[in-house]
Length: 266
Image 1 (cartoon, rainbow, N blue to C red):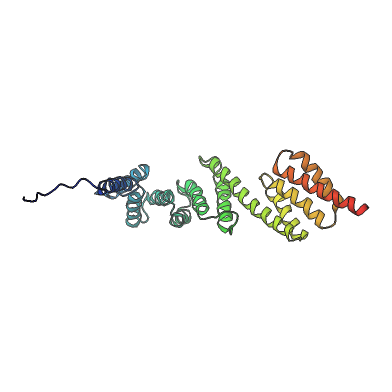
Image 2: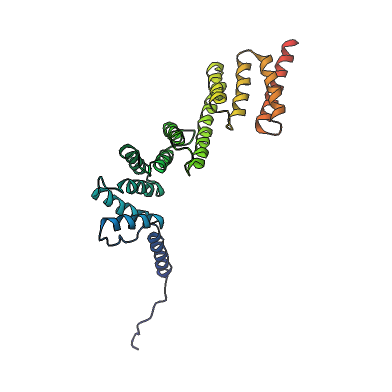
């Protein structure tokens, strides 16, 4: 009997091919679009603006970068730089975005794009910042830039977003200081602990770290031998923050100090 060729059933390669097709479609939607043909510099700028609006950020970057290079000193180059920075910002290329916004503000300070560029520079700096467990250089730089923007452009459409970002930076910096103060309390060093807690209360009075600083000051007072003052503060905190973690901690610390006081009287 002659062997007949058999048709193999579609094995596991078909789901794999289907997955690759889906991945290709996703990549196309994330900026893998083809750079359109350009016939003039005004058209290049227009296409770059359209790509940015359509979230085709890699296309926008290519078009706008070429426009900026070809039109140094042109009437719309400041707008192109601002849009180029925004495109980098949208794909989290923070350092590239920072460079473009700094260039815009340095070379075209009177541009109509300067206000949004100033805000977006702060966003690019914030993107390079890290949480309170790490160095806060970029958090401080971003905060300063948000405040510079708010001072220079009152009433601008992005003021509200900048004000929220300022508070966000305050929260992170105050948490960093409260962490440092609590570490010094654990090390039984009341002087530096007090310094950090006082800074929280003086520099960041609207943040969530304030109750921690108030509690920390009471604990630092106790470490420094000022037990009566510490107990008075803890008693007040236990009432004011009743039902909250700080209030419960204040109650426990108060009970501990009261036990110590009773033992010493015996």
